[in-house]
Length: 362
Image (cartoon, rainbow, N blue to C red; front, side, top):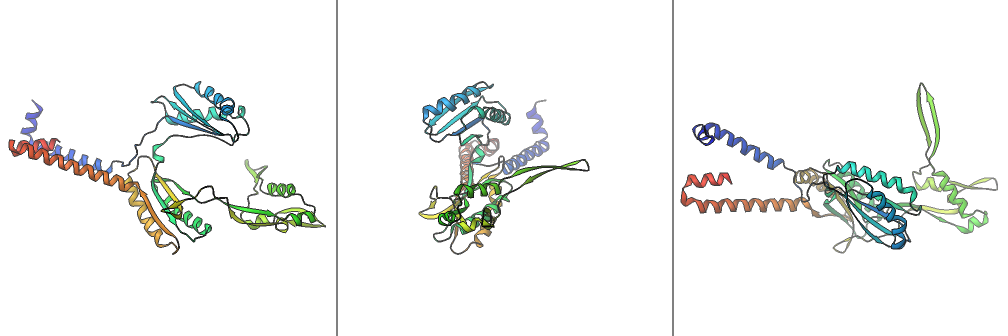
């Protein structure tokens, strides 16, 4: 029996199957992961080398040639593209497609780490990265203020970062444009000279206090507990109370010969939004997630956070990829409806039934 004859004679079964396929299609469309960037994992790994003060020629001879020789010895290498400038080299290592992305990443990391001892010790950065399109930021916001202090901006940005990190479909929530907080120590050379304290002695005292030294282990009831002395400072006050010298029978604290206070690193860049001083907060979406559902998760958080802001700080969302994806999907739906209508207008003269069958097929 032909399938067409069976479908016509048993139209009830055909109708049920059609409805099931339609429901499956609608469900698939509703649950399909949506994102502007493709969810793909290319076997491509940039290697970043930072060697300050090195010319491109020296960088090639001392570093790049050794790394390339080591990497070319691996299997399934497709090509290596290298860009060298003063003090910086970027090697773009690409494997043949079909290679296991995670295994190849671990392989190249092992090779680079094994080679580290043969490279100059003055290299300040040697890092292997993994190309991942899902690392593209889908959300960019700015905390804008012309008169808020750096402490206020840092605390506010940190609260926003922590709030967004609770969204399980987001990753890499990062703060940009805010220098790192530091504890600054300004030595008072006159006082140090009176007590005959050298600057190196002060530096050694601070370094010894922050050292993490293994203290061995304790074995009890067939269990071994490792001991490590932790010298991490919790506040500027602890730094100020560091003993740096002994003078005339009493301990000299750091605060006796220096000004110790909270500060920030020197500004390396300036971040502004429409000319106004700002701090950026960005976030990316995890692989395989629906950007529309992600937007529904973080929009209430942003709205509630805005209500808690001080009067001198404003929060502006200046890029939301979910809006772009939604607009494109709406455009796709509109084009689809127009196509159906054009087909209907073209085929209606042939009869309503024939036109309906063709439109359903489309």
